[in-house]
Length: 261
Image (cartoon, rainbow, N blue to C red; front, side, top):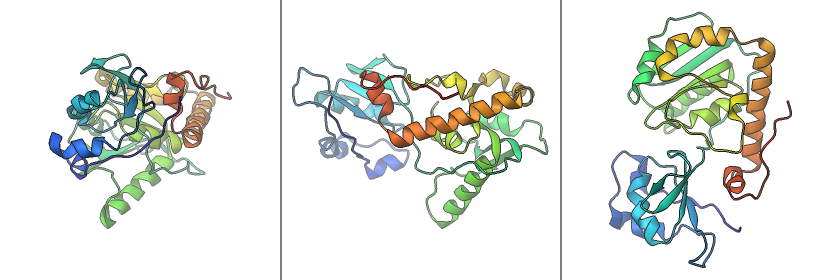
């Protein structure tokens, strides 16, 4: 299958207001499909929160499959099949040589209620829980400095809390993987893309059991932790070398990724 990835991002999508269809229509024409034959499958990718408002337009263009991190694979909306993929962040940092923080969370608590609960957890000297009044997006001089602080913390963390936000999925997962901060996913509705044995490199804790985080993390043997961290870095390298891996795996073009350990 031949395809290419293009970025189409209306200015309004960077805010929280839905975009009028007449504003999107010209932009949608820029999205490539994998075939000019209407009898063959055509797909595109949309990671934006408001992806559902453009589904009718996708359908009118002949799109049959949408890759998005917000849906479970197999879900049908507006006649389009959803396939789960993941957010890929461009703001990454490698692991610090010495990880002095057991686990951390630096983020805004204005989205999902589980974040408020995380920030109310008992404080420990070897952990770092910081509430931000804005998101970690590095826009503007001040926010870039704040984001740099966030990256420094996760680089120094052995584990990183990855709760739900506006959506079940978050860029934070990729950022934690790259930093070697083993992700502790706290998002009950999150679906991860197939192609990676995620249970070998992340920890999932139900939202109703966040009070057990400290006990669970401290009970993990150091040898198991180091293996999981190595796998986090291997997934990061996989995505770096092939950003379309999950799409290509879905279409059977590549074998399932295997960890080295």
